[in-house]
Length: 235
Image (tube, rainbow, N blue to C red):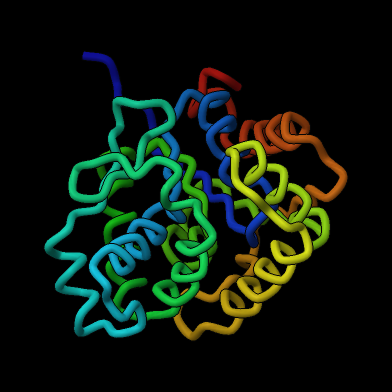
C-alpha cells in the first residue's frame, strides 16, 4: 500500500483585493492540492441572513439558521463550489449587498467560532490544502506548514475589485469600491474575534506591483523552499 502524502496546509491571509482567491486556487493547482475559500463560507452566512430576513448581528437567530441550512463545498468541481442547502451559490454571494452583510456576520463571535470549527473539519478531510481568508494563519491553522500574508495599496485593490465586478457584468464605481474596501479593512482589523492581522512568522508578500502569475510563482517557490520535494512532487 502506498504511503499517504504528508499533511500540507498553506494559509493565505490578507485584506480584500490583494488577489487571495485567484492566487490561492492557482497555487493549489501548481502544488497539486485542494483549495478552501473561507470567505465564501462567511458570504453564504450573509446570503442566508438576507434570504431569511434575519438580523445578521444576532447570534440567537443566526446560529439556529446556520444549523438548519448547511454550508459546504462541492469538491468534485474546480474550483470547489460553495453551497448553501446543497445548492451552488455561484456569483450571488459576490454582490455588493452581500458584501455589506459579510462585515456584520464576520464580527459575531459565535459565527466565527462555528466557521473556524467547520474549516478545521474540512482540513481533517483534506489535509493537503491551500486555505485563504483573513484569520487562517493566525487563528484557524497557526501550525500550518507555510503561512503567507498578502497586502497591497488600497487604491490598487479597489481597481482590481472594480475590474472584477465589471468583468462579471456588474456596474461598479471605483470610488465607492475603495470606500467599501477601507471600511471593511477597519472592521476586520478592529473586531475582537479573529481580527485581520499578519500572523507572527508569516511570509509577507506585497502584491501592489506584481501580476497574478508572478505572485503564484513567488508563493510556490517559498512553499517548495519550506517543504522540499518530499511533501510535494510539484516542487
